[in-house]
Length: 81
View (cartoon, rainbow, N blue to C red):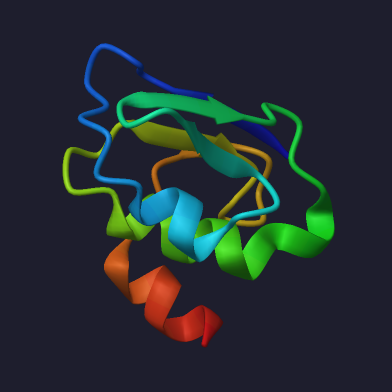
């Protein structure tokens, strides 16, 4: 699964780092670092992290299970629970 974070949009709220700490981390107070090639076993956490981003800065290829690029949704994150 491939992730892209628009670092120009990212405001450092760190919801993604809280929800998927194996993929996202804050470096300092404002700089996000992440693994752009997230492991498949992180799918549920990633769905929650994508949906929780207040500025919708994260997109994930294949998150919806089709291989298509998607931004996830609150419903997908809810279904992943």
